[in-house]
Amino acid sequence: MRYLLKTEPSEYSFQRLQGEGATIWDGVSNPVALKNLRGMKTGDQLIIYETGDVKSAVGTAAVLSVDASDPKNPQVKIKAGKPLPKPVTLAEIKSNKLFADSPLVRQGRLSVVPLSEQQYKALGAS
Image (cartoon, rainbow, N blue to C red):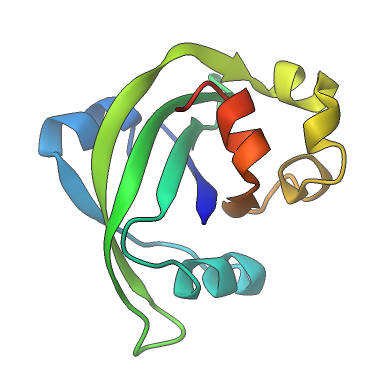
């Protein structure tokens, strides 16, 4: 599977993830986002999307481990990948027909969004 994780760069940026190498992805409270986190598996591919002033997909990451024993606070450890060749803005995402039915554009506040392989590749990940 592939997912997009949203983060406020002033709280936790992709650059910080790269500097640290890995982190536990937490602070998620939306029930749908929590369900998506609990559904992750080791090796799943991720896109990191920075919100706020950036509003762009900026980099890749991968799931290292998942502990979903506490359904209200799943512990998903992720490792940093590489920056995308170029950031993909929300405007570009919204104009791409591949994302027409995506929760990324339909549920703007959803912080953990499943992606199809085509969507993942359209964001510049390989």
